Image (tube, rainbow, N blue to C red; front, side):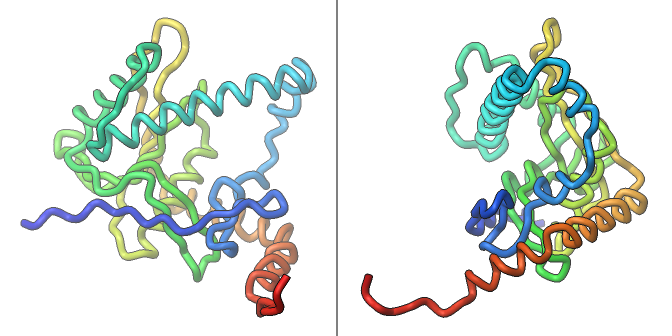
Length: 233
């Protein structure tokens, strides 16, 4: 059997008016999910102060970006030099691949669902080992302290992007690379199995997003599509 090619489609992305848009038209999954109120974050910011909260968020994002960059190179077989302090997290990802994944079908894969009017970049699209139940799965990597139901909506969105572009998806996993003291080098996998409920919830969030931001997006699209003035400047 001829192996499926590794998928990698990277359209242009642009942040306009606080919205991350692909090809200047389609909002990203993470942008869409921001319409979900997260009151616990507001409470935390009020407790620790805006400056400290911003510092913690920046540090967490920087760490997550480093882990994702390393994981992408490992998943695609690219040469990777890992700093000593990041090696435990790299090893955790290697262990996940060795234990659970038969084949990586796509990494950092960006897709657009034009009919649904959204886009996104998923971390991994894999074929799981038979010993882990088999199937083709969308996999999202996290370095957060915990996993929530919201992460199920994110993986649902990525699954919709894959299926709308002709790819089979029957499982959704989130892999948390642990960073807490004493857990370096370990990972935790949570599978989201209620595909119907999560899909309904995400599509409802998508509807609310366009209710809130639709006029702004239409204006951005109209400006992008407007004929360019050929006069010299």
